Length: 234
Image 1 (spheres, rainbow, N blue to C red):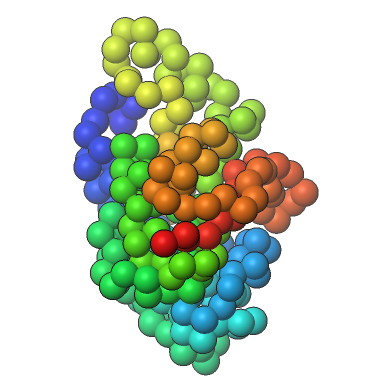
Image 2: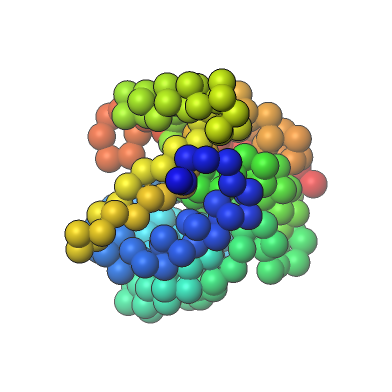
């Protein structure tokens, strides 16, 4: 069962396989960018866990010089590349791991991690934030959003985890699997649901300076996502 204890590596591989399978249909549905992406600094923009790179393209069209879309899914990277070409933007898309960013130190001006970090187990969170800090230029802009655990739809998952935790069947309370349905088949996507304090903590430990943080909606006027607006300091 997916909710039983599993290694962080297993969870990462599981999500990679899921998004490879659903990439085409996911991209056809996720067509609206997050408004927060417009606050990117411009210059060289890196969209991490980009999916079809809608957010990176939105940011690059207004002030970008070069766009890099990065996703673990090969299929997502190919879709991103087509989207970049369709918008006649200067940039590229690559399939790579956020844990090992294939860029030199202090290489990019803005980094977007929109609705992607929550797909990675908490044990890898600090490493990813340190990689973000490494590739970001000093005084660059870093924008992060993740789902907030304080949503009614997660109540049953967290309650179930609390019961299973007592019997040592699971080891984390805020790990959930969210279904995506495609042609009669259900794919379970892994999520780690951060609290705002947790996310702020790992950002600071990774060397990022927090400029603003709180809760934000996606398309509707709701506060069902956590956001961090920060900058690299070294």
